[in-house]
Amino acid sequence: MEWITLLAILVVGYYIIKKSQAKVKEKCFSIFSLIFLILAMPLWNDKLFDAVINISVFLPFVLGIFGIIWGSFGIKGNVRLSLIGLNVFAFAFYLIIFLMGTIGFQEP
Image (cartoon, rainbow, N blue to C red; front, side, top):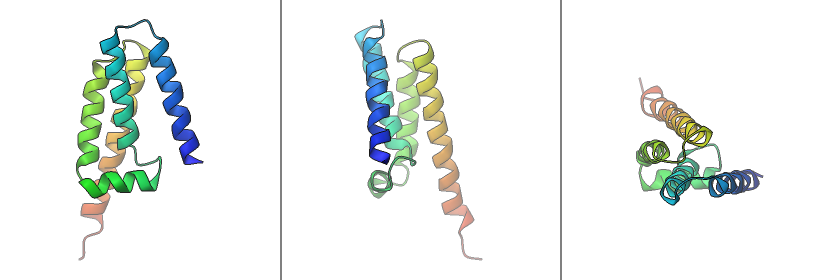
C-alpha cells in the first residue's frame, strides 16, 4: 500500500510539474527536489529508508538540504512553496528521529 501512495505522489507531482508554464530548467529543479523528498522522507517505506540509512546516517540530512536548495530554484508559486515546505518537514522529522536515536537511547 505504501508503494501505491508513493507512486501516486510521484505521478501527480510529475504531472503538475510537466504541465506548468515554466522553463525547462525550473521543471528539472522541481523534479529533482521531488526525488530528494522521496528519498529523504522516512515515512514511505522501511526498506527504502533502511537502504538510505545503510549508506550513511547523515545522508537524509544531505538529501533534505539538496531538496530545499533545488526546490528554491524550481517552479515559482505553489509548487515551490509545497516542495520547500515538504522538504523542510522531512528534514525536521529526520532530525527528531536522529536526535532521539543518538541522545535519547544512551546507556546511563
